[in-house]
Image 1: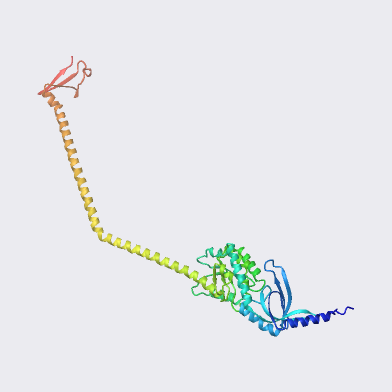
Image 2: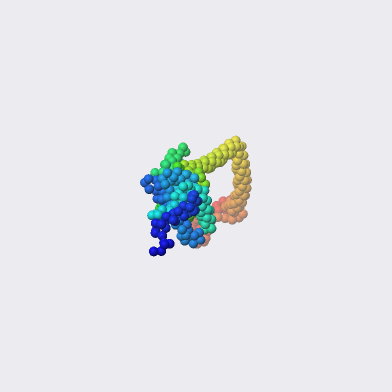
Length: 411
């Protein structure tokens, strides 16, 4: 037997002592959470990994635990400070005691956590996501979609049981102005690992009925602000930039804007603020229409007054106008009458001359005048004889002369 050999236990004991000597006090360790479980007694069990930043290949892996007495304090402290749940995928900076057990091997016992490290990493990822969306040319696409002047048909993506959803509906439906709205809820998981896929599925469902809506509202109520990374997710943000309807967000937290807020058409801080924005749009349009109505009424009233004044002036001027028209018509008629009279006199004179000429002609051609000139008239049975053919032998004829008649018998 080789005197320099070790039993496995002896080796592990020596390794344990070496680690205890080398890591006599806790050390800060940077790692990413790949697994996390909390058991019934409140202990937290982690699997930590490190990846190559360029290739994403796994470089190291180790187990860590955080006993219940510590985990109950660290977990809410971390989540309230970062606004994130302590979950798989986060990069963390933890203070650990390095321990080695002969049976269970090396393990890390978490004593403390530095939220600022995680916040820095989250901020870096957030900036990278924003940069990528801008490089893809989609960052402002949803903002460019025109929002209806009267956004009354609203598709709502929210948790059905969320207080924020109830507040939104109450604010919208019970508005003092009496505006009517139609809302349709598309239920979704709004936090946790399934939230991104759930919201995208809800968007897809809205898309299949897009003609029924004026806008999409994505709201998440107030309260705990853990798991806000959902709204910094690239896939969710990209889907929203491509959506054909304006998206209005009310994530319900007062911290920095999420990426979803940045790419949405309009971002409000809370669900009730979204309702107030929609009411503002309606009220703004209503006021515009009222102003237009007042403008039209004033215009019509002005026109009516103008025409009334004009009619009044005409009514005042009417008698004079009528008298002038009557005078002109009388003058015209008088002139026309005088013309007719002159024309009649001229015609009468002309006709009188004609009559005199005819009378003269008749006088000149009368029997008396003819007889006085030496002519005579022969008649048979009181009828003037104009042709010899009217006579025969033995006919009695009368010849009228200037100073008497002569009786004759035709031989």
